[in-house]
Structure formats: C-alpha cells, structure tokens
Length: 326
Image: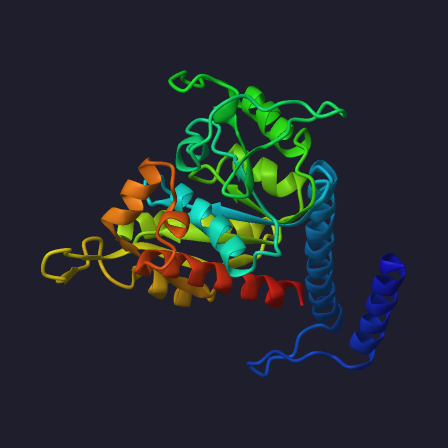
C-alpha cells in the first residue's frame, strides 16, 4: 500500500515538473529534467528514511520480551535512583508504609530488586527463608502489614553476591514470577542504583505504572538522577516525579536549618525535565535511627514531620498514578 502511494506521488510530481519548469531562487532557469530529478531524489530520501525508522522500530519490538503482569498485582511502582547512597531504599520502604497509612483499605507489597545490596530485610526487620506455597511459589515475609521479598532472604546476611549478568537476570526473573503476592493494590519495587541490566530487565518484563526518582539536591547526584529519568522515558515507563531526599538538616539544639547538599536541586531538575516534583524529605536523625532498628519512621513516629513528609509523598504518588492511568 505504501509503495503504491509513493508511486502515485512520484508520478504526479513528474507530471508537474514536465508541465511547469522549475526556477532557482537566484532567477536562473534549470533544465526541467534536472529539476524534476532533484525533487524525486529528495522525496525518495524522505520515504527511505521513514521506512528505515519503521523497520528499526519493528525489529526492536520483536527483540524485546513481551510484558506480562505479575499475578494478583494491580499497579507496580518502581523507586529508582541513578546513584547509590541517596536514600532510595529508605524512601521505598516509607513510601510503601505511607500508602497503607493513608488508605488502610489498600494492600501494598515491597520487592527488593537490589540483588547485590539488599536492604529491605534490615529496614523491615525481617529474617528467615520464605516458605513455599502449594503451587511451589515463595511466600513473602510480612511485617507492619507489608509482604516483602528480597534476595536477602535467600542468602546469608554477610555473604557477598558475586554473580555474573545471566545469574542476576535469573534471580530477578524468580523474584518477579515465582512469588505468591496474593492480591495487591500496589507493589513498590526498590530498584538497584544505576541504569543497567536489572533495570532494563524489569521494565521490559512487567508493565510498570510509574517510576519515582530519588535524589539529593547535590549536583553529582542530580546528574545520575537525570540519566535514570531519561532511561525510563526511553523504555516508555511514566516518570511520576522526583523526590528531593536529605533536603535540609535542622539542628536539634538550636533548630537552625542547613542545606548540606544544596537547595532545590531536584525541584529545578524536575522543572527542566518537565516532570512533577513530588516533595522534600529532610535529613533527620530519627529517619536514620529508626531505619537501622528496622522500625521505619512512618511506623515508629507516625506524627513526626519526617513521617508526614513520607505520607505526603505517598499521596502525591497516588495522585500521579491516577493522572497517568486516566
């Protein structure tokens, strides 16, 4: 059909060229045949480039795995960062708990996809190996009402995970497909830092409702956060917005506020990328201490300003999910 359409356009162009000799912008007349040949070549290049782009798109689509939803899970929200050490896992845990705190009727699960450095067992105060269900799937460990799954449940606490890419991909596939989540409204996925194989494998294998990017206001962290946001855009995952973690430190003695990592860097990056700024989370001793004890601040200090910040983040995420899906 495309070839016939192109042929008709070229035939019409040839007839026009024959009946109306072309004139250059300088006023010098060109030979009718030469002018017609140039126009035909331009048209052919345009058609060829469009056809090539379409073929490349089709080849990429064939090479990608087909996305298959996780059984029982309504929406998957990934929490990511371009760089480690920005508080991504702490944000993911408190986001999951904040979703439940804001609406107790919602069921929320937590998947630790950071194979090399799993943090969820410590942050959620969970130990032990998952049992198997009747259909031979792993049953998540539960604390604070949140079912959790992590590679940390399957290896010793201090054992390093020294795996090559194929083994990591196999582990991710098991964490995605061989876990009995039951019925969940939200599955929050704590992604590993960076933009590598694990991120691509997850985004290409399951439909993701949206991505939350966590960054500090520091320029170095913002550079990697931008790469993370661009990666999700390339794989057609909606970026729900940016979270500015460790935004400000308030002295517990004099209440003086200090912007240790800079101020408003993530807010400015959100404006640059054209995505929503989801909120600030302060740098506070209570967040660190409660996380180390395995009692996240949303649970241990639900009325504190820090917990309120995480609950506000959860509300902003739900609102963005509604906007994206609507």
